[in-house]
Length: 253
Length: 75
Image (cartoon, rainbow over all chains, first blue to last red; front, side):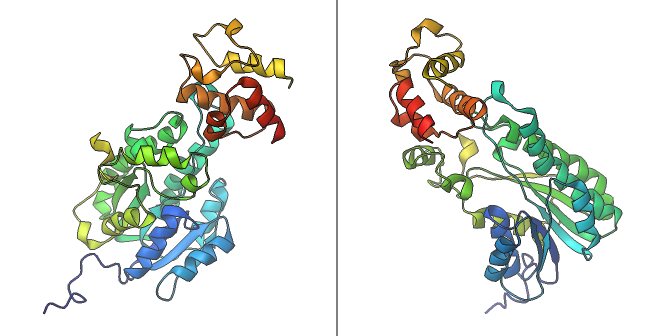
């Protein structure tokens, strides 16, 4: 019988990973999955109570919490200053406001770009300048199917913010490759998170939309988190600058 | 906002349907131009002009502009 504990390139054992937006949805799922795969995880978000809930569902010891509002670039810099050396980041925090083009609001647009685009890029910048990313680190961004131009009506502000990320990772991957740092993104389609359960769309619409998914369902946070684990692990050491679709086949239609 | 003003604001979200088409008892989902994009525009208009939140389900559950106005007012 093979001993899978000895040979497991997908393991995150011994790795220290920072995960933003870890209080809910994909970020929470990523924190839990990374901990199950052996990583020491530093989770960050605005709300301490909800971060504690994430922490309670994580496996293993040695995980840490940082409170940080990504709307505030100074707060990001200060948070980075408190971090130890890392082997990876999941730059995940993000949100959307649905508006048709003719109703785009400047302030809302700026908020989305700040949290979804500028904050994760600055987080990477500050970590690089503080020399806190070890050789061989893996950086994973949460983009979206919207980030590669596949977006639903009213979602253009979000699509812009994620499109910028999907472009950024390709440039950053080239720049950081000499340091052995890999930069990739996952591009999820619809995931069953609070955005869905908030009741903005009806159950009837949900069922109709599911028909557009060849694999017959929306994603779960775990589906996305496992793709992130792959990109963070040594199983993907020759993959960089990639926008990985994790979409149940949605883009096939 | 009065009902009359609401009907006008509602009409302004349409490009191809003449303004005089819109009355308080207009069954808006029967208009040719009605669709998901217009629905989103109405949701945004209600948010901007009245600072109230309506959902896609609200728009589906109401028939006339007046019904929608009453629902928004009740929120």
